[in-house]
Length: 345
Image 1: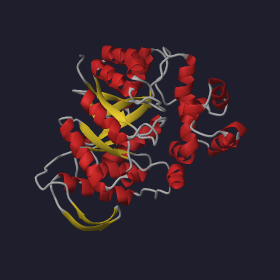
Image 2: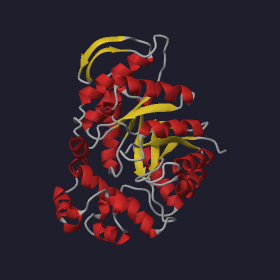
Image 3: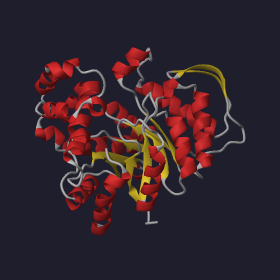
Image 4: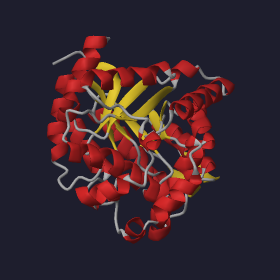
């Protein structure tokens, strides 16, 4: 096996995944290549985070495993706390519990309340207390109200916590009380640098060492060695899906023109499409969608030859990020880029 590249990670089962068993081959390939962390995103279909992370822990020996992300309000806090402790011990300390806010339209459709910054901060405090053996009596806070919360008084576990962050409040929360922060895909260079500064400043203001909070760039890595239709799905399809789910937030964060987003949404095909564009749209349909998205919106990504992709990945580190998720591709698809990255470091 190659030496670990601690500063590089990937998302297993990127995008839609009809067969979760594909993750096992991906993890074996990632470990052989030396990728440092495997991130597991959660979708309410065949990508349930607890099941996948347990399988990932059992199938690997070296690579770190992080949920990025699950939501704290979809499970009882005792279930989440015991899940994280189980993963921590199963993997010999290679696990990080990653949390996020969730997607507003989906939460509304499922009758789930939207997650607030105060709730996540309260929840993090509960997790750390439970992992260190505390019996919590009569908790009544933003995360909820419970008569008793307890795992095992003998526990004394330091389990890393990761936050998938977007806006300034989430980024500051990550700096205050999380161990790692994952940024969003298709952030411009300016947005990325600003996000890193927000996290590090919040850590310092909270009396923490900013260097102890790892900021991950989530960087679309789609090289020209992939087939054109695959690149179309992983770039246009993926960004279009983000615009479907939370386009206003992404456009506002990057300072993009909201009129372009309005035209995208008003397009008859997009307006009438049911489901995620990256998972359901055909190549011909994505070619139409590509006409609605400006090239500069797709530019914050690693593209071109493996060497050009590797240089773009290193560019994320020069913006202040501590590590980079090579997003949107499997380890097999990433192998030429990772080899070029090794050759250039």
